[in-house]
Amino acid sequence: MKRGFTLIELLVVIAIIGVLSSVVLASLNAARGKADDAARLSDMHAIQVALELYYTKHNTYPSSNGSGCGGWESTGSDAARGINFVAALVNDGDLSSGMKDPTPGLESTCGNYAYYFYPPNYTGCTGSFYVFGIRSTDGYGTGKYPTSPGWSCPSRNWQSEFSWVQGQYTN
Image 1 (tube, rainbow, N blue to C red):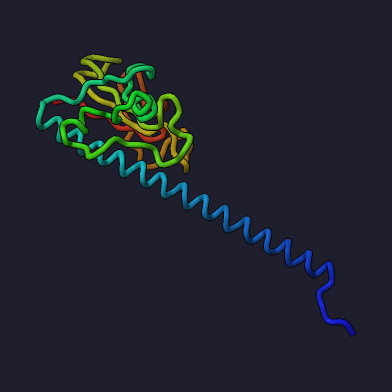
Image 2: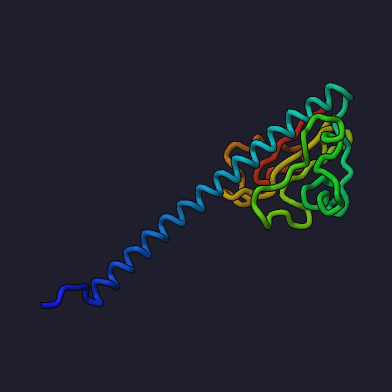
């Protein structure tokens, strides 16, 4: 009597291994996406702190010098021009280095991070203010990220343009 596995038994084992590996890979992709989103939020916190340090020193926030993205400072267009995202913060020593999104491919023409400093009374907001945010996150795409503080003026809501967004008025 021969001892061994039948073809059916081998195919069943291979199918089970395939299903298990698919589950593991899906879990790893979800974990990678959460880690990328955590890195993005960490970048946003660092930018927020740097903006407040800059404001303390200069009594204003950095102006927007972006080109090609409607004037927005952005991780994509700034890198293409060989400068850091929100270069004024880096040059002033408030931010250690330029930011770059952790997910390859999200640095499209305008990048995934954006910053803009608006003049007084823009879209009905009183006073000048800045808006910065993340255009897309792994967990929510371009939909609203759960911890997004949001930012809006009477005639414009930036939350509809970003997954995570925040703004601040000058005093």
